[in-house]
Image (cartoon, rainbow, N blue to C red; front, side, top):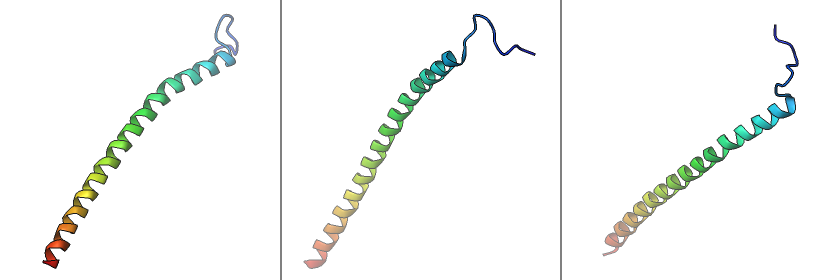
Length: 65
């Protein structure tokens, strides 16, 4: 069984700092990727909606004539 304290090893504060740094290195790229992905999806949906609305407007204008 390993001892609870290893001389010269990392203590709890050091491990906590290490975990926080690793999480920040992982979290920042993930947040950026998700933000870009949502931006692209939103704009593709907006483009589809605009095309559908323009088509509907043309149909309504053709009905009037």
